[in-house]
Length: 231
Figure 1 (cartoon, rainbow, N blue to C red):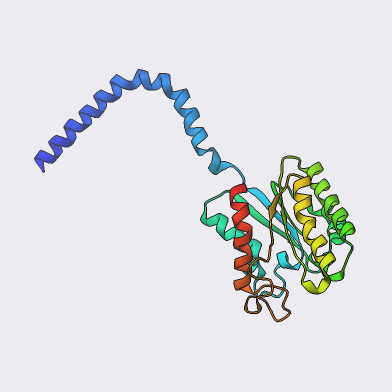
Figure 2: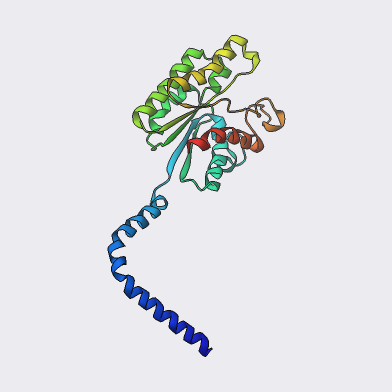
C-alpha cells in the first residue's frame, strides 16, 4: 500500500510538472483544438436529412398489418439506422394514387423539406390503360415542381412494368417511361421496383398486386441497391 501511494504521488508530481511545462503550448493551441473539436462533433448536432417517398399503395404499404414497420420505406429506414446514416424517411404514399393524383397533391407534399425525393408513381395509370403520353406529362410535372422548390435535392425514380395482358405496344411504351424520364432529368433509376416480387404468388397478398411483408423486404432491397450510394 505504501509503495502504491508513493508511485501515485510520483505520477501526480510528473503530471503537474508536465502540465506546467505545457501550459503555454496548450494556451496557444486552444483555439485551433477547440475548432477541431467543434468540427468533430458537428455531424451529431446536425438535423437529419429527409428522404421522401412519393408514391401509391406500394409505397403506402397497402394491406400490410403494420405499414409503419413492414412497408418498404419503413424497411429502408431500418437499413439507414443500421448504417448509422443521418436520414429520416417520410412516407408520402397514398393508396390508389395515379400520376394525375400525384400531380394534384405534390404542392402540399413539398411543404415538407426534401433532400432526396423518390418518385414511385404510374402503376395505377398502367393498370387503367392511361395513355403513356399522359402519364409521362404528369410525372414530368411532379419532377419540375420538386426541382423548382428544392433545386439541391437528389431525385430518384422507380421503374414499373405492366403484365403482358396489357398488350406489347402498351407494355413496352409504359416500361420506357421511367428510364427516359431519368435520363432527361438526371435522375437515378431503380430499374424495376417489383423485381423478384411481381408475379411471385407467395410474395404477394391475395390480390396478387401488393407485396406481403416478406415481399416488401425484397422491394426494399431493390431500392437500397440504388439508394445506398445516393445516401
